Amino acid sequence: MVGRPRIPARKIAIANGDLTYIGSVCKYGHQDSRRYTKGGNCMMCQKGRDESYGNAYKKSPKWKAYQKQYQAVYRNDPANRKRLDEIQHKYYVKKYYNGDEQAYVLTQEARAERRKELDAIEAEVDLRRRLRQDK
Image 1 (tube, rainbow, N blue to C red):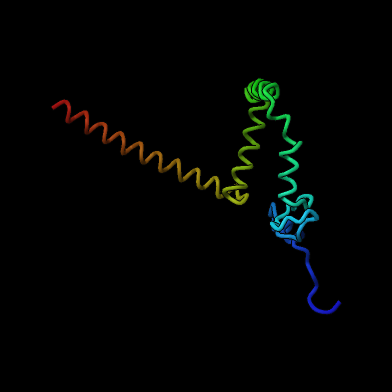
Image 2 (tube, rainbow, N blue to C red):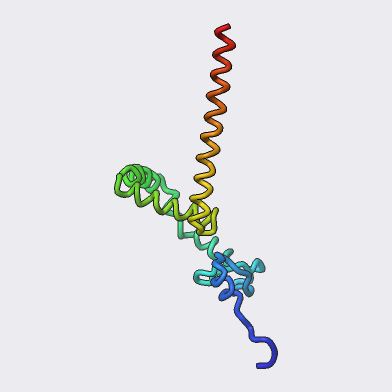
């Protein structure tokens, strides 16, 4: 092979941690060539699959009632609540802080300090307001 070695776009996207990448046109001719890194599926084809049969059962009233009941029990169970809180925390740190737990902690500490400052200011304003009303 002559020239530069070819590195597939999917491998680069996986290395970068991307969910999608721009690949070749799919076999069904979708010109929007965005594909998922996990599996390499065309996004348009996957959306069609989900709409046609993948999520049809989720639209039924029976399924919705079951899910509502299940989620109410599942989320209120203390053992599951702790686990769900941990999962939500990890997701939040990954999404908004690029997985940097230390940056998250520093931000939370800064918010707590700011909250204390605002509470002190608010208390002072309330005190002045009460003093004015007493006169």
